[in-house]
Length: 239
Image 1 (cartoon, helix red, strand yellow):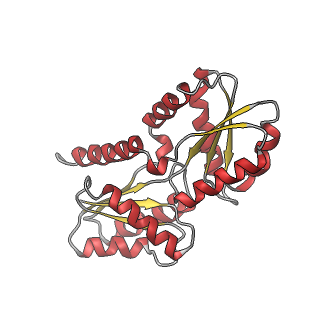
Image 2 (tube, helix red, strand yellow; image 1 turned 60 degrees about the vertical axis):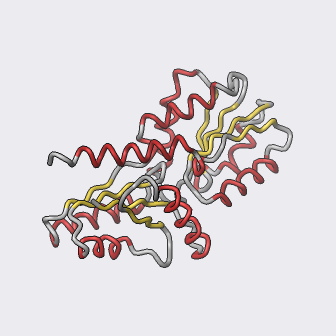
Image 3 (cartoon, one colour; image 1 turned 120 degrees about the vertical axis):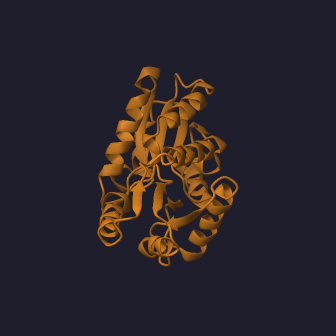
């Protein structure tokens, strides 16, 4: 069984290569056979990666997105790729897991972090990573934060980019609040997180900012991904 972990890239070969190695080192002790594919990378070719795995004798290939929301690749390119291999290599089973935000345990991780920070009087700004010309991630983020309605918090959704850009919308949304709790909902290179923190300091300079740790370094998220992969492997044992 071959696993392919898919991560967001920044279309910068050196940074993408460093991030790919970081992800590989993170999961190497826990997953037996896997590769890491970087989206938006000039040097990556997911089709060729899967073709090589099949040439090596793999008959079960599982694609696991380390993205919180859908991407153009997950919605269009990967389904087309799977369909192509289904026709050319019908003995090979290729499947793709859902993005991380569809995993119910992510809600529990964030809920635990929020409740430890006395969020009642604060604005909770959930910031994801979307696409400038692609609406699906925005809809998924709005659906995701609706799962926290039982907490009765002042929670708003933003993106790092696109029509829900936090740098444009957050200053006005937060004007009535003295404190803002930021939930970074993405699995990206550290540079992106640091740039966001710097921008937050500039656009909300009179606010008390409480930025939750990046999921990129989250042990809880890593364990969740590993468990999901193991659950899939166990589900294939008797098939």
